[in-house]
Amino acid sequence: MQTMLTTLILGATIAAAAPLTARSLVSDAAGQTYDYIVVGCGVSGLVVSSRLSENEDVTVLCLEAGALDHYEDDILVPYYIGLQPDGFYEWGIYTVPQTQLDGESRHIPMGKGVGGGSLINGMVWNRGNQESFNAWNDVGNSGWGWNALLPYFEKSETYTPKNYSGAEVQPELQNPSVHGTSGPVQVSYPNYYWPQTNNWFEALHELGIPTSAEPNEGLSAGGYFLPLDIDPINQTRSDARRSYYDPIIARTNFNVQDNSQVTRVLFDTSDNLTATGVEFATGASAPRQTVYARREVILAAGAIHSPQLLELSGIGQSSILEPLGITVLQNLPGVGNNLQDHGMIHLNYNYTSPVLADVNDFAINATFNDESAAEYYGSKTGPWTAKPSCAVAFPSLEQVTESASSMLAAASSAAYNLPSTYDDEPTLQAGYERQMASVLSELANENIPAFENLNNNAGGLDLALMRPLSRGTTHITSTDPFTTPSVDPRWLVHSFDYDVMILAMQVNQRILNTDAIKYLGPSYEYIPQDATAEELGQILLSGIGTEYHYSCTTAMLPLDLGGVVNEVLMVYGTNNLRVVDTGIFPMVPGSHLQAVAYGVAEKAADIIKAAQ
Ligand SMILES: Cc1cc2nc3c(=O)[nH]c(=O)nc-3n(C[C@H](O)[C@H](O)[C@H](O)COP(=O)(O)OP(=O)(O)OC[C@H]3O[C@@H](n4cnc5c(N)ncnc54)[C@H](O)[C@@H]3O)c2cc1C
Ligand SMILES: *[C@@H]1O[C@H](CO)[C@@H](O)[C@H](O)[C@H]1NC(C)=O
Ligand SMILES: *[C@@H]1O[C@H](CO)[C@@H](O)[C@H](O)[C@H]1NC(C)=O
Ligand SMILES: *[C@@H]1O[C@H](CO)[C@@H](O)[C@H](O)[C@H]1NC(C)=O
Ligand SMILES: *[C@@H]1O[C@H](CO)[C@@H](O)[C@H](O)[C@H]1NC(C)=O
Ligand SMILES: *[C@@H]1O[C@H](CO)[C@@H](O)[C@H](O)[C@H]1NC(C)=O
Image (cartoon, rainbow, N blue to C red; front, top):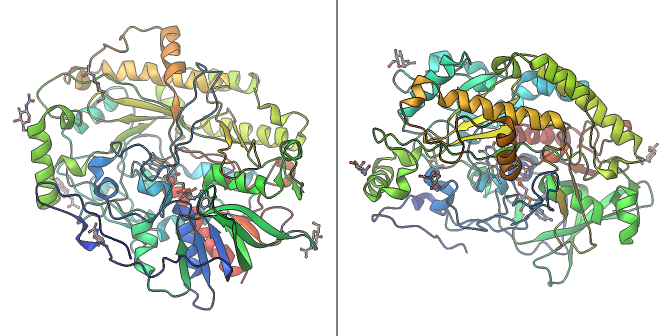
């Protein structure tokens, strides 16, 4: 039985709705047989498990390494974004030293628990551009363009627009035809609008960067007010646990076993590879247990752990597996290569004007913080609903520089700087060249974002690279499943990626110099307003890290382009092993990843059902 853990602040609690028991939570899966075993109950795993169990004639088991949460305020209340304690439903994994930067390793946070990344993420909900999904289709994945995905993006959400008086985000300026009205995830807006948001949009207008009230129709680049996965009424996080688990726990054919880390996939090798089940353990020194699959095994462990499991199970690049003494069941060079992420740097130009309170005041003004907490718990209003940065920009090259075409020309002739695992692997090299051509042709379009600017309304103007040409790797270095894989994101190894980020930092300098932002009193203590490109470069190399958007490591691509899964997400060489998570993206889209992950998993569930 789950105990309800509530946080009491000012005598109030929001956890009244927490279920006391979760009947779908099992602990006795070992030795049993299910029709489907799903590995990892994060965003993708819960969507797939939930949809497959709609058919009451099939049984589904989802195995999750982390725990089922207790409706902690740290998860539910937007205020706690970024304030959750170290290791809170999180793996605690670091990269290898980034020698192309400053030689340091970086923390790459990943969700661990029923709900995965959606328990701890920034709640931002956007999809990226139509062309980026059409490009997925065009690199060899028939049926994966924007028009094919849109119904699934819609299927995952219930969208509730909001009319902040006079603001950019008015419902009549939005496009209801791209939104869902009855999906599991509540997508809406905070019940508070930071007044500085207007300065942000004015600044973008001063610079000629267009804004739009509809970020999710996939048509434009520029400024937006982004929705969140937030319940419009009670203003709590609508994560995968709340949306795809809680509503269906009465289903007897839907089973989730938490605290169970899958250690490998088991195969019958007599007729190609047929997955027969998986091995798992409740801890590094606990005994390995086995559970059997009648129909399929579906890996949804995320872009780092799904390739780890493939490699541990004998599916991967021979040159990685053989030195570890692992029998190669299927040589697939794509596994663990093609790692993509949006490199991100936090930049602070703290606004000093005392006229308006901002998110920094929570920490330094106890009166403001206490009043905000009281408003939140009392009426679900006020700044505690609005911690995340909703007012952002995704500019295209064309919108911010005269040199877009020369940057793109230089990019295509620059050194690739591919990982050494690409040596002697013509399919990986061919796949890279196909992707590079695709990304560069997209970026020539004035509606395709090149970078993201995450304004926090307090002088934080964080930057993230949306369409990287750099490629990284994640590979096992041990046959022990509890040894963390070696993750090497290789941010900025391609000179184009570096150049785009320097450009983005220069755009920050222009933004700070607009009348609308000067009014807020930006501070140049950390980054001088007249910093040269070389000085910005030093800041960039020591500051860049992850935007948590690890992807593309088990890419859906043709085999001759280094693919790992085909267009129905089946691992090449297997009869019944699929992957469904951000690892199957062939190229990372220019957006945050959760809305895309939900939509892709919805489509995957239909593909799997169609094969029944
Ligand atoms: C700190 C942070 C902030 C983010 N902010 C945003 C944001 O604001 N907006 C946005 O759109 N996206 C954001 N993201 C990204 C988004 O949350 C992820 O892209 C998304 O969760 C990926 O979904 P997934 O299904 O691929 O993997 P996940 O949701 O990560 O699920 C994978 C699950 O598999 C489990 N697992 C792994 N290995 C095993 C194993 N061997 N056995 C059993 N279980 C296993 C994991 O514990 C996890 O629960 C953020 C992510 C993080 C970490
Ligand atoms: C918020 O409201 C939704 C219904 O809109 C409900 O399902 C959910 O449990 C509520 N969340 C909390 C934390 O009370
Ligand atoms: C939104 O608010 C604006 C200004 O307050 C008003 O003009 C407009 O009609 C409102 N729109 C809707 C759909 O309520
Ligand atoms: C096994 O693989 C071969 C070659 O890929 C294929 O022709 C054959 O149909 C496969 N067998 C089954 C049962 O899928
Ligand atoms: C600027 O803001 C950051 C983030 O809120 C904070 O850590 C830092 O101390 C601030 N610096 C100053 C000088 O206020
Ligand atoms: C702290 O917050 C209170 C309440 O919002 C406000 O009245 C006061 O001016 C703030 N103090 C400072 C020093 O900003």
